[in-house]
Length: 98
Image 1 (cartoon, rainbow, N blue to C red):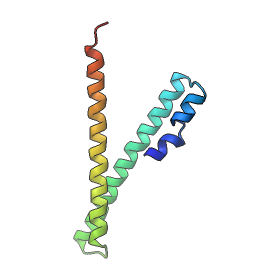
Image 2: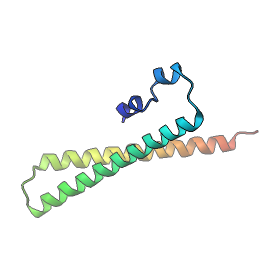
Image 3: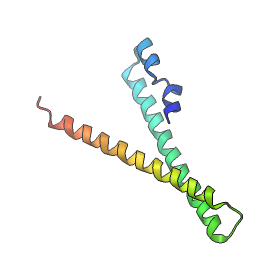
Image 4: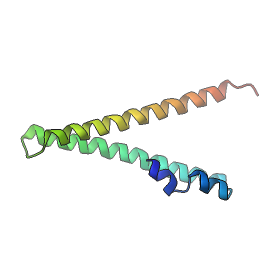
């Protein structure tokens, strides 16, 4: 995901060199966020598929199944923590006096 930040133009160097319009930055952030969620979903799907193959007795290595499951788990935990921080930041802004 870190590679995705610099690829879509949200890297610090790109942000400092030219001021972007807020609408363009919002679209870039939305696209980045959507891509990140799709990557988490794909990791979950891959782990489920490998687990099903293992249960059916197909030729799949146990360590590959465990690695895929751990990758999916870590990606989901990171997504949840990012969501929690975003909600916390929103709540903090709502508590600020005008």
